Amino acid sequence: MTDAAVAQGDLIARKEGSAGILRLNRPKAINAVTLEMFHDIDKALDAFEVDPAVAVILLEGAGERGLCAGGDIRALWESSKANGDLGKILWRDEYILNARIKKFPKPYVAFMDGIVMGGGVGLSAHSSHRVVTDKTKLAMPEVGLGFFPDVGGTWLLSHSPGEIGTYFGLTGQTMNGPDAIHAGFADAVVPSAKLSALREALTKVRAGITLAEVKALIAGFATGETAGPVAAMQDKIDRWFAHDRMEDIVEALRRDGSDLAQATLKTLNEKSPRGMVVTLKLLRLARTARSLEECLVREYRAALEVFASDDFREGVRAAVIDKDRNPKWSPPRIEDVTPEMVAPYFAEIGADELKFP
Image 1 (cartoon, rainbow, N blue to C red):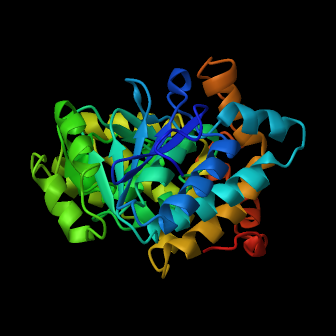
Image 2: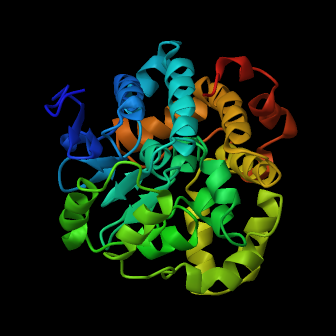
């Protein structure tokens, strides 16, 4: 790969000094990732991995709004409506890429500036070095689409302290930079005004630089913050979300008369009941998972069922297509979600589709 960009399309992959740059380049769509972009990232990583002149990888997003707003939900919705197979193909290739990033042999630095959601989390939060800023707005809002936090989200959330991951997974609430560190989604807060200087420094590192040396380099630009506003609510969140049934979480919030509990309950009431029940079960299973790959296999099986579900199509319709913010969930209440409805999301199918590196 030459110093010139190999592509000026939706992904720009090029060498700048000793850094292999991956720039998501759909700024009008807040860099929402497509199947082709996943393939292009994989090809670029192939080249960067074997190039001795590339010492570090740097993932960044074009434009001012964020790293990545997630996957191309509209395309998935259209394929789901047409009984197509985009979900099966896209999630397979995406999840394999997520696992590759986790194990990539060179330092992989993600600039998680601005909006980072869904598929953007999958490309960044499994990196060896995860940099957030004062502008970071990170979220896994999938339950609002009749879905669940995927791209290894169940692995990440299940390793958050206490019930912080359960809270973020079920509410879809946004983390700022320090809370992303507290939740285990990031490593260092660097002011956005200092990102360009850090970027410049990363392009000048020596070949063979170690993970510890990259960490120390980033620390020189970082604020040292490790906990934000949600961390201050840890005790309450742990109490409310400690249950293994959605009905019990809702009841705990109902019993608490605080404004915060009621606001949290209102948020849950807007989400897909089936999506929340599936998410909670995935999060509890992830706690005993031995690897990210194990969670990705489970997520893939559940995603295939989501793709065929009315709740997914309805959630995307309400949030993305018609934007009326008024989804009609099926079933409409948590207590109406039966074990028979949930069982297909955990069927022992599809694992052979995921061939991890």
